[in-house]
Amino acid sequence: MSGWLDDKVFSSGIASLPLVSIDLVVRDKTSGQYLFGWRRNRPAADHWFVPGGRVQKNETLDDAFARLTKAELGAGKSRSTAQWLGVYQHFYEDCVFGEGISTHYIVLAYEIVVNIGALNLPTEQHSKYQWMTKDEIGGSNLVHQYSKDYFR
Image 1 (cartoon, rainbow, N blue to C red):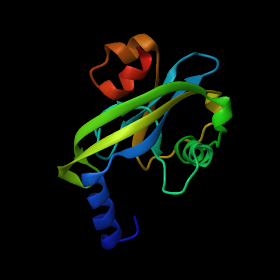
Image 2 (cartoon, helix red, strand yellow):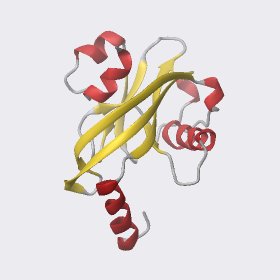
Image 3 (spheres, rainbow, N blue to C red):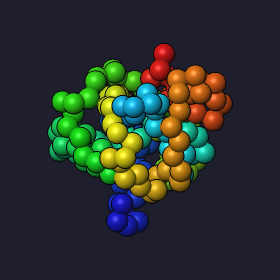
């Protein structure tokens, strides 16, 4: 967002429409562990969450996937290399702008396999990262339930 007016328009959209996003279930090729980032911003702040982001207006799913993998992982990937996991819905009581506006996401989830050394992880949305086994994911109360749902 580039300014107050953009934030006002976007918050109005969040208040009245579902957002479409892509979540990335990222598995390390060697260890089989999965990547989680510690969320800095709302919704889902202060939880371990899988990488992902919104699909932008007039953006194809293939372009969104390439953009999001580049932005979230530092390594652009093609959607054709990913395994489709399904459509999910996420409902939050808050939004990126704080409390008072709920957020509804329609999430397209994909699993991708990577080599850990090929990633360059940013810190804009996640302050730190952790690789976890399925058992660690299921046993942690700090992993957000919506991320846990991908492993059922």
